Length: 395
Image (cartoon, rainbow, N blue to C red; front, side):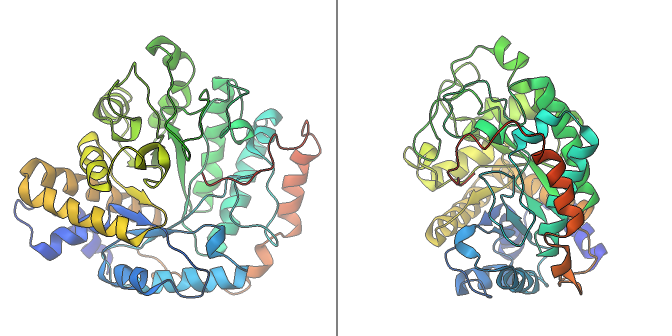
């Protein structure tokens, strides 16, 4: 669709949308993953993209066999969404270190701790631009990075050297420089994991972490980077599946109105898009059905629900969001406002240009090129040592 059509969709907030209009809005609230590594997405994903039932996809290592294959797959994802109201998000976790989905022939990326230790903001922006330029060449437009957590607990099983530092001021400064490189390459950065996963003892893929700090400590440490990124208008933030009793003793942060709407939106003034971490992670999936999660999340202020594997789960989420919006006028307004934020982000940073996206000639030459490797080598030469944990993670 052309630019005016997108603008009309952003402004459309009718009190009584048709079923088709409502489902189109709900589609923008869903970003999903799938199984298989082919040059076409599975039929259910292909149909959903073509109909606008989902607003984008996320790829993992399980979806990738080669750069040629992933380029062809992403090309097809973009083509399938050509007639949807906006371009699809095509997302990946390409942080660096032990959280990368794309390896050789792309430029190897050191852990972000090594970047933070450099204390060189210009070089940080260059590193970020290398990462974003290479994934953009493959058709990705959304990267779930940077990590904004402050690594204050050496026993933390999930963050560690993914964080820029154990000092919130260094995390904040380095993250700000990281945003610049992604903006240059026109890839959307998404900071994570709000309100701060750095001092937990449990991996939220496995169980629900609890952070027992009081509010004064959160303000002094965990919230510092998020407060600054909110004021810097980072386009997207991801929530953490964790309990923070001083903020909300009943619900994990992802599903907490006090944490998302009260703290992030109202107190920190954040106006960008809020996305959940994967709703199939045990931290929340072991305690809530998907219908409960989207209901609580929508009312808490979530804009996008990330569901990384199961078609049944995202289909149930889609149906329940429709039922909520049809049966409760306040929920209809919440769906509309969330969709407007997502569409506005797509319009402002992706826009109608080169839609559908296609690879440009010579894209292979960018991947792992000498200039990019030299940028990374400047960090590796000064890194204090190897990654703390070589295990690859799903972020």
